[in-house]
Image 1 (cartoon, rainbow, N blue to C red):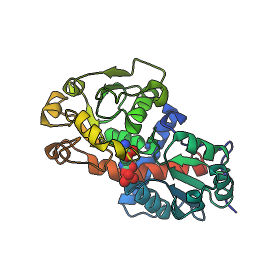
Image 2 (tube, helix red, strand yellow):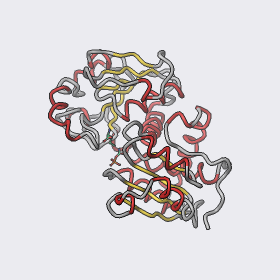
Image 3 (cartoon, rainbow, N blue to C red):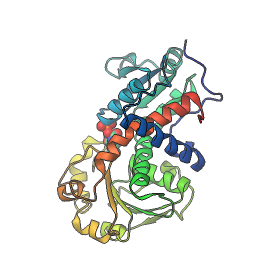
Image 4 (cartoon, rainbow, N blue to C red):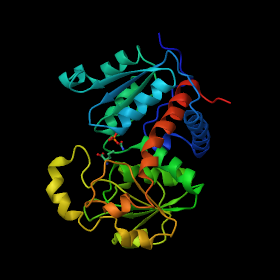
Length: 311
Ligand code: CP
Ligand code: NVA
């Protein structure tokens, strides 16, 4: 029988589900959990806890980081995909949520529409974490901001340049800007703009839009991008390839940013499309730290959702 969660149940479905103060707590816990891991110190607060991971889209980082993280904390993991579960045979998501959440302590879902994960959470007895939807990717931005803090200190007041699609990553950066108080310089090709309603943002002072991606990068503290075609949009591949041709982060864009600007990419990356190899493999890139930090921040997140505040 799963142990009781702190009540009321907290879910992590989008970045704005947590406050700035909660993020400060999570980042402090991440630092502690990561430093213990680096010292090979055993830390097993989640013994006997089980995480169910449901993947309706492909993944490398999200699967490995959640699975390794949960085992390192003493828990165990159940991995489900659409194809090997009754989800692929039209069992309603609400019924799936009712059943799974009677058997496990925590659920991570990667799926298509945000409404689907919201419906699951609405019928779950245990916390639900968004491992990526068409609209948001909060665990990734959690890792990205932690990585920024590790390298440069607080992100508050800084400028993040987003070059590319107005997608789940862009939406989540915008939510983070509102919660944590920084500015996003947003440059997307025409027709691929962020929809503020979908992004779930209410303020205009945290975002500036630029037609020219080079101008978006000017003076930025962090330059970031993502694939031209996200999972689920593959049919648009050829059209997007043409539309996004000028939205490739190159050395000129990095030179327009601050001299100590960082480059991030959630990965997987396509060198020669959204980013030139000399940038992603260059000295300003922190993409490998960013990927590793998925595991450390998510360990802090799972600990928080299951055990509440510690220390
Ligand atoms: N960045 C990220 O979520 O990677 P995966 O798709 O490999 O999980
Ligand atoms: N925007 C990308 C992110 C992949 C981690 C996608 O949704 O496919």
